[in-house]
View (cartoon, rainbow, N blue to C red):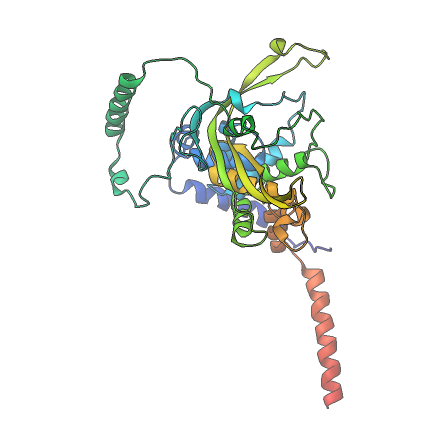
Length: 371
């Protein structure tokens, strides 16, 4: 595709960038990163998830630089991520070691360890809170002090509690199939181009990096009938998990000697999807498969939609776009999709003029024939 440079383009671009800076500064207010981190947690989580870079501080900086634009913030984070060295890979994270902040199941009322509602908008009234217009540091501090007192009154133990997985309870009953751990190295989609058909590890990586709205829309499309995958959420858990890595020069390292790197906050979902399978008598029988979803931070809607698409893509079906891994995986990436759409704003003078010339020639020929 050919592009024609505009005379004086450099000066115009520099002026445009200065105008962009002016628009950000003209309100004479400075948005501190601490303010973004303290008040825009969901936005920070989405940026980290879609950029596949866990750094709340950098995500907050990208949000500030992009003036709240999700696509710009993710683009900035992806670009920065590409400059970082990759020294080692972490060990497999076991969700059973999560320090759970929120854990619910839509499949059972009572689950081993109990339900933990945690912090969520699910149970709030979706009404504008005009009281927020009157917020002040003093009133906020008073509320926090009162809340901390109420917590100290009910906290009788500081023992760390780990919650079992709901699906493990069902496996013990023989209701769900157990699988041997697969220690095959996962595909790294940040270093290898996608090739179709792809591996499940690659699909999960692309899904968890996918644009939240796109993943949610495709999951919703499946629920509406484009594949008719209608799961029951077995478990949603939100919390922090520890990250460990091995010494790069040691091969058979004892797990207890691994290095603790830090912790990250995750949302993990396991959905139970009803399917029809042949039993020993070759008759159709009801069974369940598990759809899996995970993403940085707290983003339960995306993780649930991801679990739906995970199960969809395990069963390719050209009839439904939600079961076509090429269709799904290539269209949920926010940087790829927004970049390609945005490139339409760039000069296309040569190609468009050639099309106009073709139309003019055709219309001229028709006019000559008619005359």
